[in-house]
Length: 222
Image (cartoon, rainbow, N blue to C red; front, side):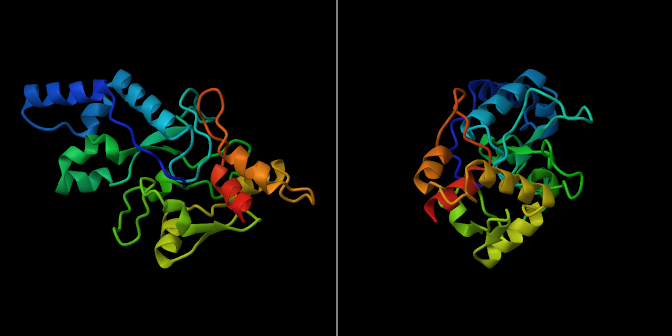
């Protein structure tokens, strides 16, 4: 997880919500938004841009253009405050842009088929305000540290519970983190921490950050 600087909602979403309320005299639910395919696509692109191309939880690179081997989307719009609670307590939060993020679907390319459920798919409807760590918290990453075997470690009880509930130590994620460390030369005697840290903040032509830049930053600062 890294800090996400949330931007204003797209104008198309604002207008759609205003028109929906005017026509129906009630706030729209996410199921209403889900029927608006073009609008949903606009939202996905906006989320992808502000998240620098990364999953809001594990920091794997996201892909909104292609389907996986099962012909399913490779990521989804994640509600940090779950939709089922929005229905009970605050319906408007279902379509609140600040409650929307983009999460991977708990699958990674070239990963094991074991223990692939993590991030938004693993979190599902879980929400406990005592253990939530939001990517909107500027210092959110300070709750975690990493081992060179790819394991994510919580520095406090809140972080340990959060890791467990989101499956952030799944086999696939740990293996992916190890591959990233190997790619930047962490296991070599000539490992350059300064280069690693600079690389972790480098953006490509689309403004996207490297896969798992969070663990690269950790060992670049260590």
